[in-house]
Length: 368
Image (tube, rainbow, N blue to C red; front, side):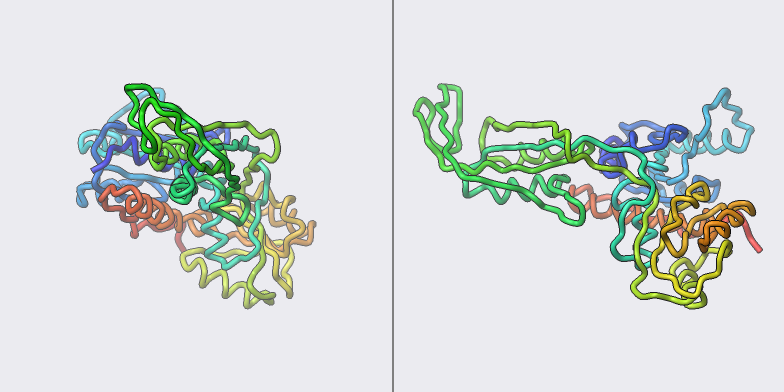
């Protein structure tokens, strides 16, 4: 078992809470961070069915995309629909955590999941939402252990630049040290000046992963006392974006594009608006409700999102854009499997020995 605190820390390394939009509510919704966790259920929404399923499965934690508590509670009536669910969660000691727009925005999050599901290539950010500082971390390592330290730092999130990972720069030098009588040097002897061939390992890292990278570096480093430097870089910084834009593997006509979308998003109730195009290659997308970004999609052939209204389609037509309403549910149901896969990978890497499964029986709240 691991503590809910460790699960939350892992989620927040992936999707930092400060990425969330100002109107959003993300993080721990119900329960204690000190709860022992052996089974997690992932889901798009917190519904009575999901909670019943978690109880039957004897899960101790539910992680959702949509916030279970969205607006501030002024009172807690246990006879209300939400109050009834909160009571069940507390009585069954089930922790609820939600990652919403922070998971939409982060690299590898929901919009990247959707782009991958549509088979897009050359994927890049769509609508800028802010930026994060980047840091350079330098540590000094004996030559024969430098690779292990590099790999540990990369696994914790260092050295990610665009489409590349495990990036670093190293140069050789000499390290000198003399330990006192209380020291236990790995190389040399206490009280003796020791000269060691060392490598300076330099990596860059964003703020969300900085502490995890430092911790991983210290754990992998062979020295009793680890020397390292952390510098704040004013440029470059890491831009955050909502939505993605990319290219289909091949240019499609309208009917082929319709079929491709339906195969990629089998539970989506597709609606088309704006301009019907005969040649479609560049796709902009925003999971959930992204109609407000139609103007940002004018350079794309088609814009895939959800919750499109009548006048949104009118605007798309005026802009010469094909807009696809694939539904809020249709563009976001994949998140349950995406969170599941991420946590399974984290469990394997961290030796958590927990079970993570997605809730498979959720359906769209709209039906024909």
